[in-house]
Image 1 (cartoon, chains in turn brown, orange):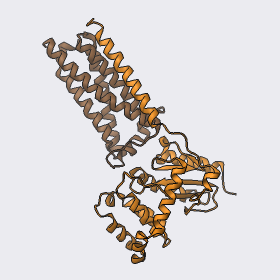
Image 2 (cartoon, chains in turn yellow, brown; image 1 turned 90 degrees about the horizontal axis):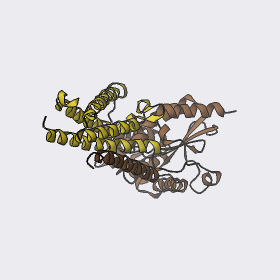
Image 3 (tube, rainbow over the protein chains, first blue to last red; image 1 turned 90 degrees about the vertical axis):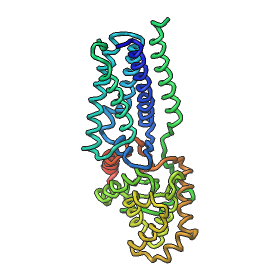
Image 4 (cartoon, each protein chain N blue to C red; image 1 turned 60 degrees about the horizontal axis):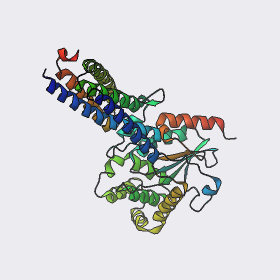
Amino acid sequence: MDSRIRTIIYTVAAAISLVGLAEATYLAVLYLTGETAVCGGSASCFEVLGSKYARIGGVPVAGFGALAYFSAFSFATFAAFGYARASKFFALTVLAMFACTLWLLYVQAFLLHAFCRYCLFSAAIIFLLTGVVVAVPASDKA
Amino acid sequence: MKRYLPFVIVVAVALLTATGATMLYRTKQRPALTITKEKSTSPGGESVHIRGNPNARVTLEEYGDFQCPPCGLLSEPINQLEKDHQPNLRVIFRNFPLVTHAHAREAAIAAEAAGLQDKFWEMHDLLYREQPIWSKATDARTLFNSYAGMLGLDIERFKKDMDGDKAKGRVEADQKHANLLGIQNTPTIFLNNKAIDPKNLNPESLRAAADAAVKEKPSS
């Protein structure tokens, strides 16, 4: 793949990761302050974000999400600057995030029977990042 | 220089995120609320709506907004707590309709108007149960009138009370009291005068806190 296109793709991936980082950080701070996330007048956010699935060992899942997005952003940035290994780490991070997203979607759909719009937005971001990973040919990931 | 640029960008984003998160945290952080004896005996501090044993030693006091979805979600679990812990736990409800909710104040007045015919809790439960319907209605008042009919209230009196000063006065008294306590969000729930951490405002944590309080202070 042309290095210019590769730079553009990873720059876009870094920008997408930044949006996810902002959202996850916002949710993590809301959790820490105890404020209820406003979700267009629906109780679903409260139900999902207040559930036992929204935290692991007292740490909000959004906090882990922020860390994951920051890692994805960092690897995408390094990959955009031509660091060969970074694209591999970026792919691994995004695939791990994708797996977690599938689990969280399952929890919302089948265990809580409620969907949080913030979580769905985050899932959309991760699907986009997964698309980037799939779009970049394997030979360029090494 | 280009070699170091990604490091600079990553560190800058980390710093910006940490600074932004800290600022947001400071903006949103609120002091822990407690109801002191002076505050509970201040004008408007007397409890009007009590469900359960009035002399129960454990009191769960909610400042709620009938149009707030989380309040609606906790309504039934709180009713269940009161039933499960009879006669050790009583529930007090106070109105704190938020200005951001179009029909919240009117709903609070409807509950108080029903209260003037001794059906406050029945209207309270009905308003929470039907919240998804009336909160989206353009004319919620008509629905409140029909709820009054469903509860067997004197409709004409209910309509008069909705427009009168007594029901409005009760809502305003609750709001004044809430402001005195520094309440800003709904639901704000106190268990024996100590506000429950908003992080624990879910049915499971609320039950655990109530169970612990009842165990600690059983009625004699």
